[in-house]
Image 1 (cartoon, rainbow, N blue to C red):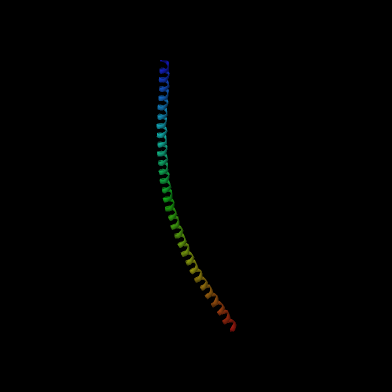
Image 2: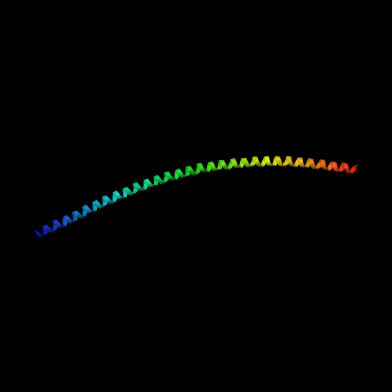
Length: 110
């Protein structure tokens, strides 16, 4: 009778241990699946954030590039206008200088 009781206690302990292991395995599997879901969600979120950042960066870069090109074109126009004015001014000054020199020369021959 005592042997049967010891065997029953031993079987009960073994059954309790098996039940505990199975429950632990289920919990571990659930935690693993939850961690994988969280990781996938974080990866999707990060990918979405990266895509948004790249899109914004590209849009901002294009705007900056357009502004740069516009400023460059404005500078070219200003520079060209300045050069035209400078040439016109030099031609006027040179013409004025030549006429003064001609007058001096004409006077000196008199």
